[in-house]
Image (cartoon, rainbow, N blue to C red; front, side, top):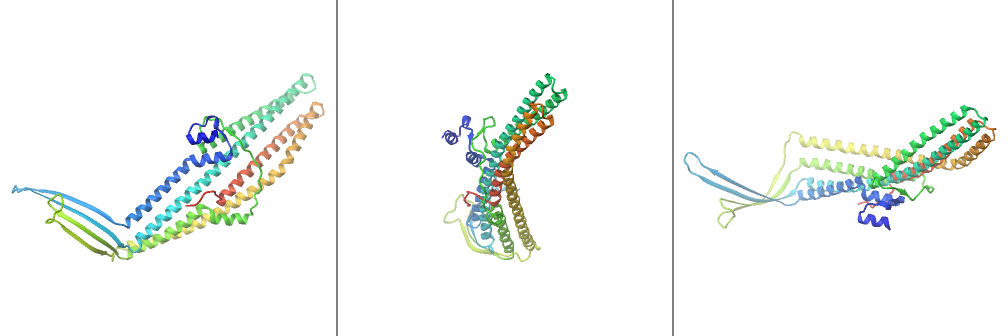
Length: 415
């Protein structure tokens, strides 16, 4: 409720920065600048549709001129001419109508771009959220390693003081502790960077303390790869945009070909001279139909048609390239997700075994039966197993979100 209130009133979040994953996504979708830019693109495309429709409707123009004449005869004179003219295109070879259709396709494409932008921002938010959780756990693991090395160093120093261990083992323990601290410092910095990344995406105050309330929860992804590929080819918004680009290019060919055809315009006008407004004695009007046809234009129209046809082929090749890219992206994300899932299962037991191994090595060393190398190896194995387990969990979560993104899964409704 507090978070909702802060959002509604646009107040600084302050103590409200305890975010679930869904809340973080909603904040990003409402506040991210990229989405706002995409929305402006929709506004521009809608205005272009209105402009294209206006070009196919009535247009009214007014002209007025004032002239003053004098010369050697000193015969000063002043004249003014006024005219109001209206015109309506009757036939343009289909060029105006096709131009409207192209602008409408561009509007649909712009809306698809907005939806795709929202999908990508959602993925960025999910990945950034899980990055923070992973970095946080990595800090905990590295802090545990520092604590273990510190405890081991204390033990070695005591044994050295008692004369049962050599000075070299104290030095080796100090080096291992220093290395562990370096790793911890890097992990803490990586955590801070991950927090900054999420704050940047959701537009949260950079100085705000952030607490995440969700964590990784395994949920199997049941869809087979072939269905994911088929779904992506139909539902990826950028592929839909590429198909619209092909349609626009094909219509542009017809627009260019309209240059070979005549154009017809209906016109009407009213004019008068030497007075501010027309009266019953001083005016003239015209009304008529005018046709024009470029019989020869030095092959300009032919060249335009050729360029438009090349644009169609270019759009078709771009669509094929984009389809290949989507196919590869789905396969990569899907296979990476499955690989992470297998690692997630296999590393669960490894952590338990590594903890037991470390405990045994530590106890043997305290009893004077173990070696320094056993402690170092056991600690390294424990840290590695823990980090592998953490990495597998969040890799799976991120790749699962990526699979859904590259498939084009979306809660958005297309315009």
